[in-house]
Length: 284
Length: 284
Image (cartoon, rainbow over all chains, first blue to last red; front, side, top):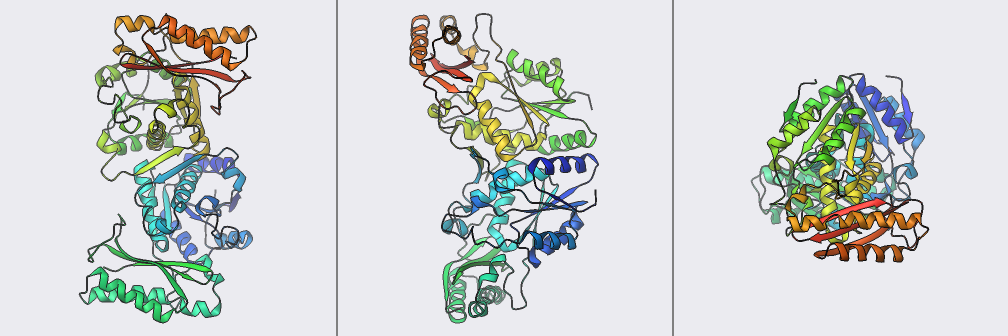
């Protein structure tokens, strides 16, 4: 069971998962869209501590991209991914084909209603429907006991936690800290598309978030004041940035707060040339 | 494991299902809204042939009723149900509370898009969203290998088959024949609300369906001719009937046909006083 395996069909992965479960072992899943970076690898290492068998799924999911978005130029490196996943100590890579996941006549979707209308959902209306649907499918195919997601996609993690709770999958959801570059930029498969000039401006997001946290430590709690400061940091340090949103929300519910409370998360989305960057930080 | 058990919490049922699976046994689920009749009992008996452990769920699901529909007066008989389920040879009854299934803040739904806009879905717009959502939840709670549904709710069975296929639950779906009264009326928990006068008219649905099948045997294939004859049978034999729809569709896709093909199902919905009756028959 510990021999490293790449599965490419739904039926094949389901057979394998069934065998693992019947043998009394537990399964952790790390869903990815490939083009793996250190953030993914830290999830895999963490997963090894949480279950006997770690399954990493690699699938660039078309239903979470809008027609004008970057599905076609999303980075793909299946061979490199398999090598990295093996090195990180996972046991199985599930790499399905699009036509197997969304065959002709496909028409079923999972929707989390309210939490998906804000933040990313406001800018990307059908994005989360694609995310919840593909993760539902992966859960049913892999049958995990534990699932690991990165905090970088903060809203995604909260939406998926809500989905699992509402639809009662017997799966423990673990959200892991964002892995950053030395200068604070959150690791993302899309960072590679930043030119050197834009890459140099990108840490402004992290600086804005860190400043928000410092302001709260200094006793400033008015959302308006904190957001204004964050905006000015980005404008000054990333002159090419177009800010999509800056938000302060209650962590689990994603509800906006007017004054910082116990579980407030600052999050933001910024377009920098061809790349849309997101990042967030718990500021209390 | 064969001692008869009634579970009343999601966590309790999940623990029990996990134990059964780890012991190498298979599970069959028969989802019901209670008020059991012979149709349900035949599903339970069939389920016993398909898996080691049979779980019958009893839950009157609020999300599949529209506000003006009969949720409040839907028949409820939990004690009688438990007795009947035990007698039919099932092993576990799962009887959750509404507040456990749909707690405060609930907001996740499963939707099958196109197949739910026709027939019943046309008359009951959000009905199937409620059905697919509750069945998704029950699947995740009970973790069955096999699920059994009655053909009386023909569209429901096809929609759920589509959902399971699209979202990849490793569950075998079995659709069982409709159980009828001696005079042909399909068994339904709602039949008890028919007055003797209306009850006497109710077999008209079955007669219309049987006539459709006979017409096809005699070489008549034009949908229009068959539907006209069905309508006239109902109007003549059930003077109080208000016909909601009469349809001839391809069995799996639910697409209307203009001429009878290999897998054509005739289905109809008729209001008879306080009760809305549905029935269907494969006519080829």
